[in-house]
Every structure is written in C-alpha cells, then in structure tokens.
Image 1 (tube, rainbow, N blue to C red):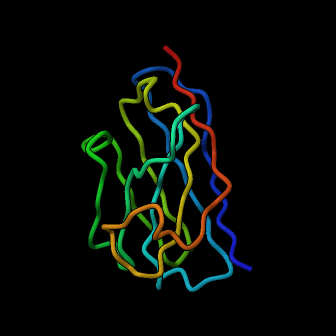
Image 2 (cartoon, helix red, strand yellow):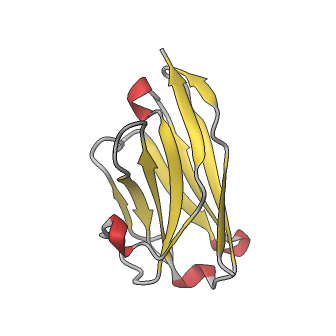
Image 3 (tube, one colour):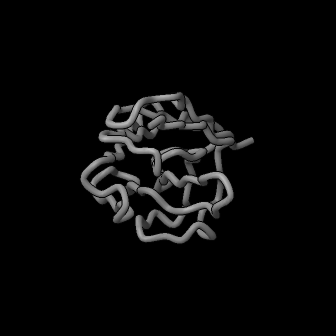
Length: 124
C-alpha cells in the first residue's frame, strides 16, 4: 500500500519560513519524480514544484520561484519543501505527489499518488 505523509504545516507570520517534509512508503522512492502542490480555500489545486528521480532536475511555479526550494533524500524516502518569505497568498493545504513518469514537467493529472496534505497558514 502506497502512503505519502506530509509534516510541518503550521501557522507562521508574514515573512517567515517553514520546512515541509513528505515521507513515502510502499513504493520504490527513487523511481518516482516527486512534487508539491497546494490548494487554497475555495480554489483549485495548483502545482508548486517538482524534482526528478535523481534530484538533478527541478521545476517551480512562477509564484514560488526564488522563495521555495524542493529537495529530496532518497535514502530516507523523503521530499522536502523549504519555504522562505511567506505571505498570506501562500496559505493553503500543501500536498506531495509521486509521479512514475519521472518528468518534472507534469500536470496534476499525471500524479500517481497523493499525500493527505498539511495545512500552512500565513498570518498578516
């Protein structure tokens, strides 16, 4: 049974930073590209970042480029999202996903497995 579990979401102040993690089990982690997406209240889920199987290739949404960093530790079956300079527009439930295609240029429909999400709230 494949399971992705996110950790780290919490309430932070505008301008603050936060590090999210997602631990995967039930799959061969290094065979999957990993991604982060988010869903704000009343909005559709949107792509945030993706990282290739080796970690060599990375893709970011324009809205987070320069502020967020995605990374992975294949030995720990974990993908991270380091977030800096947070603002209220970043408030959302953040989900990690696993994609067997291995591409970092994916749509949400390409995600094979999703985590349950972790809630990030940025206060103004």
